[in-house]
Image 1: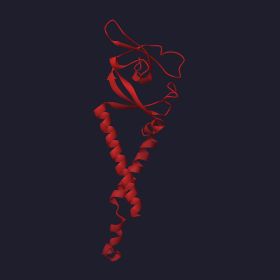
Image 2 (image 1 turned 180 degrees about the horizontal axis):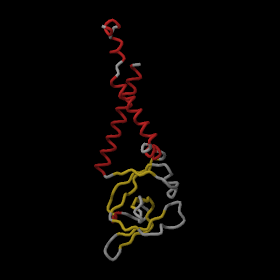
Image 3 (image 1 turned 30 degrees about the vertical axis):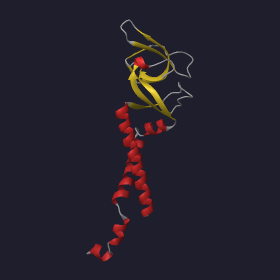
Length: 169
């Protein structure tokens, strides 16, 4: 039992360190995760992947880069490839984007000052991240936390050291 407890604690500690490191890297380097919900960028970014993007000024974006920008409708974001850049009469950056799997460019240009420039894609991890936002995912996380808490605070050796006569009296 002590071996299992030790393994559980090491796994928990390792996961904790990884989570803290990723959170800190996100804050320090401006990295933000996005879950890929459509197939418009396949095969480069499959549905269910977790995409990581770093905020950069729009002037540093080149044709061919993959960027995440707010939708022109204001509802969420879109992650597509830059096919053209332009500047309007006021000096604002205009991007024309297209999903790799789409036949045509996005219908509207995106007027942006900063964009999320694509860094990496982790296939499948978006499903995990998305499920953590559901009631089922929250229950699962709660169970995992409970298991780790029990592994930390319940010591089977201490229980065995207490004799039955002592416990009763």
